Image 1 (cartoon, chains in turn yellow, cyan):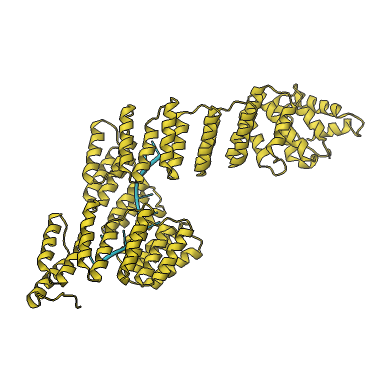
Image 2 (cartoon, rainbow, N blue to C red):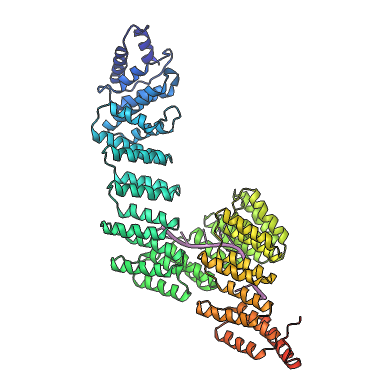
Length: 616
DNA sequence: CCACTACTAT
C-alpha cells in the first residue's frame, strides 16, 4: 500500500544521501509508476528543497507533479515553513502552464491567495517569480491569472496591485481578464472601483470593448453619475468604440429613472444618429417611462408592427402600466396573450397583477393570483408579500398583516424596511401615531437601516403630533446619516409648519429645498395654499395657486378643494363657483367636501354677505 | 441593460 514511501525510507534510512538523490528517487518513482496510489506510513519529513527539485524536474510530467503535490497537501505534517512551500506552489503552477492545464493552475493559485500560511505581499511573490528566468509570456500568464484569482476572491486591492505591477514591468494585460475583474466588481457593487479599473485600462492602453465600456457606464449610472457616464461614452466614441443597444439602453434607463426627459431625448437622437435600432428592451424602458398609458400603448403597437418579438419583460411592463392605471381587464388580457404566445410569466408579471389587485382593494383576487403563481412553480418573494401587506393595510386589515408576517418568517423572509414602512403608514392612517413610532423604533432596534422613506414617515408623524422640534431633529438626523430628503420629506415638514401657523418657516423650507435641487410639487403648493388660507391670507393663497401654473404644476382635487372651501367660508361664492367650473373643465372629479363647501357658501352669502366668514 | 413593494396635501 504505502510501498512508495516505505521504499524511500528503506533506501534512505539516514540523511546520508543528498536532497538531489532523494528527489531523483521520488521523481523516478513518479515517472515509472504514474498510477500508484501515494500513501505515507513511516516518512516523517520531506525537505522543501526535495519537493522543489521534484516539481521542477522536467522529466516528471506536470500531471505527476500535481499528484505529488496533492499528496503533500493531504499530509501537511510532512513539511514545515511556508516560504519554500509558496515557492513549490509557484513551481507547480508553471509546470501546469507547460501542460496547458490552466484550470488546475488557477486552483493552485487560488490556494496561494486564500491560504493563511501562503498569503504574502505581491512584492514577495514577484521576487520569487523573477528568480526563475522565465519567458515574459509565461510571467504574463501567471500575473494575469493572479489578477483574476484576486478578483474571484474579492481581493480587489491586491488585484489592482497586480495590474500596476504588470504595467510597471511592461507586461501586457489581457482585456478579457479585465472584463472578468470588472464583472466581479460589478457583482460586488463596487462601482467606484469599477470605474477606477476602467481608467487604469484606458491609461494602460488595454483594449476597450463595447462590453467593458457599457459595464462601466452602467456602474456610473448606478451611483447616479450619469453625466460622468455620458462623458465616458463620448470619450470612447472618440476612440472608435461603437456603442450598441445595451449601451444606449443603460443610459436610457438611467435618464428615465432620474426623470430627465432631456437626457432621454438626447439618447434617442444618438441612437438614430448611430443607426442603433430600438430593441425589445428599449421599448420596455420607454413603456415604463412613458407618462401616459396611451403613449405606452403606442410604443407597444409600434414594436409589434416592427415585427420585434415581445418578451416577458415588455409584456410585464405593459401589464404593470395597465394595473397602475386601474385597467385590470386589459392587464389580464395581455397576461393571456403572453401565455398564448408560449411565454412564461415571471414573479414580476405576477407581482404587477397582484399589485393591481391590491391597489384596487381586491384582496381576494390578489390571493388567487398568489395561489396561481405558486401552483405554476413560482416562489413569491418579499416584494410580493409586501405588496399584499400594503393591500391589507390600506383596507385597515392589520390582523392580516400579522398573519403575513408569520408566513414570511416561515419562509425565512424577515421584515425589511418596506415591511415596517407599510405597517407604520397604516397605523398613521388610523391616527395610531404612538404605535407607528414604536414600529419604526423596533425596526431600528432590529438593525434594519432607516432610509429616506423611514425618516420621512417618522418626521411626518412628529409633524402630525405638532412636535416640530422632534420633526426638525429627525430631519437633521437623516441628513447626518447621509439620507437625502426627498420632495416628500420637505412637503411633510412644510405641511407641519403650515398647520402650526408658522407659514414663514414653511416658505423658508420651500426656498431651502430648491437650493438643494428638490423642486416643489403640487403637494408643496397645496400645503402652502392651505397654510395661507388658515391665517386668512386668501390673496396670498391665490397668488401661490397662480404661481403653480407658471411652474407647470397642475392643481388637483385637493388644491381646488382647499381654495373652494376657503372662498366659501368667506362667502365669496362667485369665486368659489368659478374655481369649481375651472376644476370640472380640467377634468377633475370633485368630492363631497367641495359640494358641502359650495352649499355652505350659499348660506353664508345669503345670511351675512358682508362678513369675512372666518368664524368657525 | 429592463420588469414587481413603502413615505407627503382637503
